[in-house]
Image (cartoon, rainbow, N blue to C red):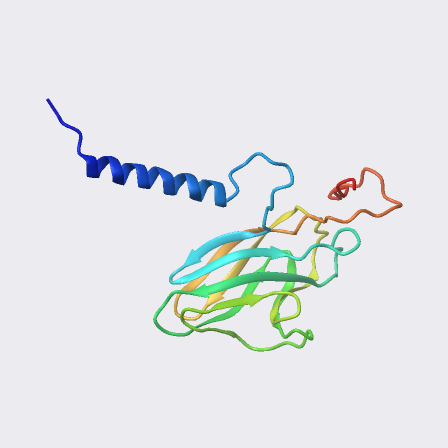
Length: 180
């Protein structure tokens, strides 16, 4: 006959409680209006890659020949500074790392233990001279190259637009705003 251990019950209760709390905090719900962050997430060596996505097309899809911003957050968990050397994709002639003002710059330093946000208003990547149209919600492959840790290919999407053009009806990729 096995007797119940009060410590085991206490630990089990705490673990189940913590899992329930995490489940609630991470948004595991069926609400339609829940926050859905854009982007692909991955890891290469000690570098965490978060929210990798092509910026939302401003007025319809990105067209052939356009330059499309590519945003990503990088967190280096390694012991020493790393660097993002560049990127490539088959959907654009090239991918440049640029400053906030759009001027081409060199590699991006990834200090140990620091979040580096490559996004609008900061250094980020730009897909130059698109070879095809990219609509909001489309997926493309982009390979990021890092110093020492190598490269990783990510399937990223073009952020789905949240605007509505008054002249557009039933246009693919457009989402109607919530009624007020």
